[in-house]
Image 1 (cartoon, rainbow, N blue to C red):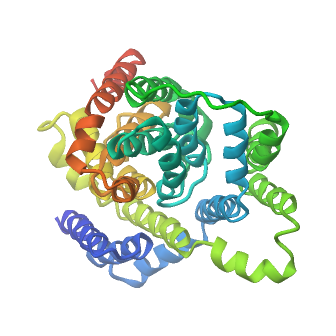
Image 2: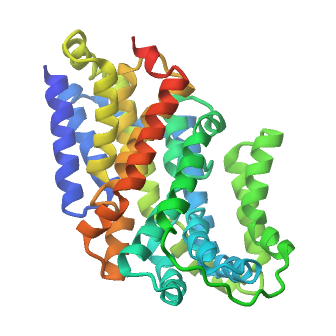
Amino acid sequence: MYHIIGIMAAFMVLGILISKKVEFGIAMISATAILLLFVNPTAEGVGWLRDILLERETVNLVGIILLIGFMGFLYRDSRQIHRIIEELRNAVPDSRAVVAAIPAIFGLMPIPGGALVSAPMIDEEGNRLGMNGVDKAFVNWWFRHMWFSIYPLEVGLIFAATLTGVNLYMIALFNIPVFMVHLVVGIHFGLRGIKREEHPRKTADITNIIYDFLPIILALSLNILFSIPLMISLTIGVLLLLYQNRERYGFDEAGRVLMEGISRNLLLAAVGIMLFKGTIERSESLLPLIDILQGRVPLLLVVILGAFAMGLLLGHLPAAVGVGLPVLLPLLPVVNVQTVAMVFLFILLGYVISPIHLCIVLTLEYFKADMRRFYRRAAQSVAALIAMIFLWLLVTGTFSLFL
């Protein structure tokens, strides 16, 4: 019983701290401390924390997360991402395609609240197309998040793979049909009714776009094709990005770049999630809860609603995955690509539509858009995405694994 009370207390503390806008990593570490007080408040419990911090899995995850955050900072700080947008404007004559591509490209950069970075560009393009605030907000939100189910550098997806031991790229491949529907739905519902406006097409050099994306391409290629650990391949990608901007980043800039580019929030979040997961595993805190649920509530329903609730209530994908997966894993009949992808997709769905999702909050604030009108605007698109997720999990036999 103490274990169940401990988990409930940990989640209560986590929710209170997040609502008070405490950094997620600090909130996560605090929740872990509360859980440990209930399940093993001894020297052995403290030893658990030390062992978790020193585990290769933890060190590797922290390194990957910091490198991804640093790469995102460099792309933004060097304005290399803005050069990509300019090349896109030159290459694509239809402004509707440009206004959709802007948030999609920024979605490749793991920047917290990154929707606010793309918003001014969408505002400029959208004004020429006669888009209102709700239309701009929808496009900025929907297309930014279309990659999250398949992008190997998405932190939430990396957490899902790391916490379960399931191959990152296999989860991404499994989710491709959902990604395709996300894209098609966005084009149909997001750009429908927006007037087509063609601007003069300028000469665009595709090699410039490839060059600017080369650090990401290289990092993923080295990992996929040559099995070079992601932390090493990302380091090579970061070094290439620094070299591409060597005129901007001299030795006199090293201190500023390291101070601003290394995210303490990401570091604490990764550490906190691994501590929480490890404490749950070592204490076997969920076994009493599983015993209570078995035979009373269909486990499939518990997993789906639990995953969705995590995304919806936390409004932060890495946080929802980091907290939700350790809780839901013991309920899965088997831990494989299908079941892990299912949990991730429902967490992602809850996160994408969460009213405390930072991208939604910042986007609506920037465009001065009404939240109720925004959700009415998004309803058809979200319904189509939900239908696709259920259909895909049904066709692939994922649901049948729970029977």
